[in-house]
Every structure is written in structure tokens, then in C-alpha cells.
Image (cartoon, rainbow, N blue to C red):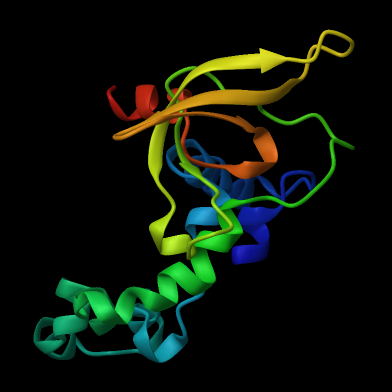
Length: 166
């Protein structure tokens, strides 16, 4: 399923295409991670459980146990998910540019990823030759940074936050 969600190019049959469109409208592909079948409550429905077993199944109502772990267990999130937010690719294909009010992390090679400052883009700087955004100004709680876009990780775009207000 993750490969369907991540695929932006392939055309799917109508049923699958409609489901994937709904997922894309409400989230970004990099927000989805693999949950093994033993921990995935969505798989319980396909296991042929009786109604009584569903009612007694706490995972169905509360979600997988790892969601309720203490903060020290979220190191996996920092180690595995956070790096996926920073796409490492050249500008071979057009993609969305950063925009004012995007929520971002400022990459700082001197500290661990979990310590990167959270900020908001206050201005974008386009290249005069090709019109692409090559750097941004980011305001954090304590500072203002001018950074190239490869040193910024998008957490929430202006469009996504506007969509959630509807």
C-alpha cells in the first residue's frame, strides 16, 4: 500500500485511484510508515475475528501499542521518519517551492536532527535566471536565518494548513 501512496505517476483502476486521491488530499506520502501486520489494527478486520473479539480488542479502539510509548521510544521517529522529510534530489523535476508561512526545520549539521530549530518561512529568494526558489529566510523562536533550500526541511506547507481549516 505504501508504494501506491508514494506513486505520483502511475494510473490506477478507478477504485484504487479514488482511495489514493483521498489519502493524498489529506496527507503527504512521507507521513505514512509501514506498520507490521501484528501491530496494525486495520489488519484485524481481515483476520476473520468474531464481533466479541473486536469488542475485546483494545488495539482496535486505541491503536497500536507503540503510539502510547514514552517519549524515549520516539527516537525511532527521529531516526527513521524525520530523514524522509528531506528529499535529496536535484531539480530534475519541477516540485513545489517553499512559500511564506511554511513551517520548516532548519538543518544544522552541528547538532542532532532532534535539535534542529523549528521555524516559519518569512521570505523566499528566487534565482534571477530561472525563477526558482533557491534560498529562504526563516524566523525561529530565537533567530532569523537565511538558508539555501537544501538546508531546510518542510514540515507543513501553507496549502496543507489552509486545507485543514476547511
